Image (cartoon, rainbow, N blue to C red; front, top):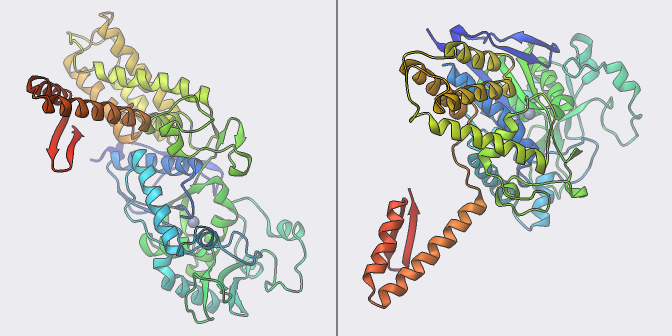
Amino acid sequence: MHLYDRQTIKVYNSLSGKKEIFTPINPGHIGMYVCGPTVYSNVHLGNCRTFMSFDMIFRYFKHLGYKVRYVRNITDAGHLVDDAEDGEDKITKKARLEQLEPMEVVQRYTVDFHTILEKFNFLPPSIEPTATGHIIEQIEIIKDILQKGYAYEMNGSVYFDVVKFNESNEYGKLSGRKLEDMIANTRELTAQDEKKSPQDFALWKRAEPQHIMRWPSPWGDGFPGWHLECTAMSTKYLGKTFDIHGGGMDLKFPHHECEIAQAEASNGKSPVKYWLHANMLTLNGKKMAKSTGNSILPGEIFSGENNILSKAFSPSMVRFFMMQAHYTSILDISNDALLASEKGFNKLMEGIGHLDSLPVGDDTDFDVKQWKRSCYNAMNDDFNTPILIANLFEGIKHINLIKEGKETITSADKDLLKGTLQNFVFDVLGLENRTGTDADTEKLSGVVELLIQLRKEARENKDFATSDKIRDQLAELGIQLKDGKEGTTFSVS
Ligand SMILES: [Zn+2]
């Protein structure tokens, strides 16, 4: 018997527009694909929220005992946002501006992405495939779609024939659009356009001579269209039909709609059972945009180096803040909201800190089993983390009452309370009992460096009593000094 056998999970499926009971295709196993970042700049805070939502979902499934294969790709091939746009992709543009090889851009921002996610305590996905590592698979899918008559070649580029596809399938079913309306609302094609219909999208684009990121193909040198990599990588690692496809709400159209069309044209069946979309993050009530200055990077929040927030906030605190909103709701980040959330975060961690020393008695004044049930119920209802957090605070309230001697708890119930809190706070929500920000770490380093300097001076003056005292007392605080050829270094345990 697995923990998941006792839960009925409901998820909001964007495809049906309804909450549905979640039943994996293969019992006990879950295949989940999430569209990853395009690595041409520092990871956006809004994207962190999307990936964090799926990290929480991944964590909950694992907690329930499911074997989850979670695939989150890295888009490193560079794609054009708009097929009609001639010219550079984002990666090539950045490479030119920073005078780097495109793959240097990719490497730099992949490292940044991983560093930030690690600070936020993300679990690594099971597979993190790259688009450039799957060019062959993408070419094979194009050949297949061409052969099935849902695509056409034009001057070295290959386009998906949306009108043809829509004759036997339904293009627009995920985003609730009708092809006729889309056609009626778009501009006429100009004579230079290679596409038969404005809705057609590129599967392969011919590379102009100056285009750096290019690969040979049966249609000449070029590069894949921006929707194709996800179809290639999800099919390769999760099969023709898999359980969950996730991503930001902004990817629903056209990206995910095109993924469905490609997979249906190629495999003849719908690729995904449940489509999950995470909502966006706004800053001070407005859309985040670098151009308007209404933008903040995760690293700037952790260091406090920004002119939007009054202080630095730790990654775990920001994670708690994000988990206080449901993943399908818009969340607004502001200084006041973070300050309020920080109080809650500290209260939660303090409460957990009291657990070990909590006295036990002959009976319990509240129903711990029922409370535990309500925590699972919250998560089973489309991963409702705000309700879960409200329940966790209910547990904290009782901890404080027991501590004050106003309530009692039995030893067995205390264990249950502790185990449940730890499961949800640390394993499922992925929080860490660390309040330190990058700014705090920097201050600590400064203080320790100062003490190392004082110790050095004491030793030079043969005042070994003082130098030993500094070393020993730092060791008691968990800070070890190590003397080496290059001077003294320290580590924190
Ligand atoms: Zn994708």
